[in-house]
Length: 212
Image (cartoon, rainbow, N blue to C red):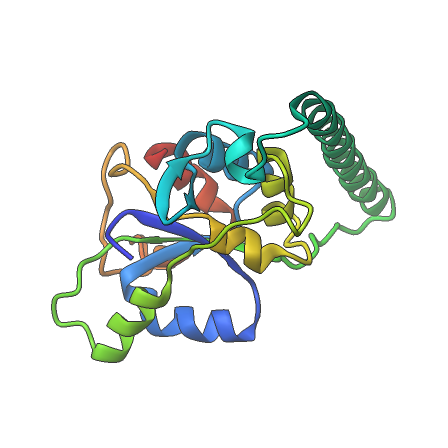
């Protein structure tokens, strides 16, 4: 994984253990829906016939040449369905926060399922094991048989960490981001110490905006 490349990862014990080993060389956090959409639509590339292809056409994800009219209708309906789902989730979150406030407490957000990780340092003086882990943080493959026929399907599968997250994520190439607007502060220091490395939780979304 090259400097300023980013990838999605599923939150689990193995992922967190791996990130602990490479933490001085990366920064990561919990991307929101807006960040996931912007990354995939603006910088998303998939692997099709061993080629790196921009995700500007749903046919790239779908890999289908037939029934274009039917597919367009299906894609439109799925996009509407996902929009309703996201809106319902947002309303439910607001309701739960208000309810907790009325009871004199506070609402604790559910544990995040999705991470976005960005490499911010080179490999000078890097331990061979750490270098190997960074090399393994790559994504590839292609979809269709998993019911993922459009970019909105891809976004939904990634954002919800759905049952075919692994396949959807493997289809994506690493996101090639630009150097962050305003630069980085201290790449060798942890984020909580005023630096840039390590876990920045929800503040990863601000960094994505600066690099997208």
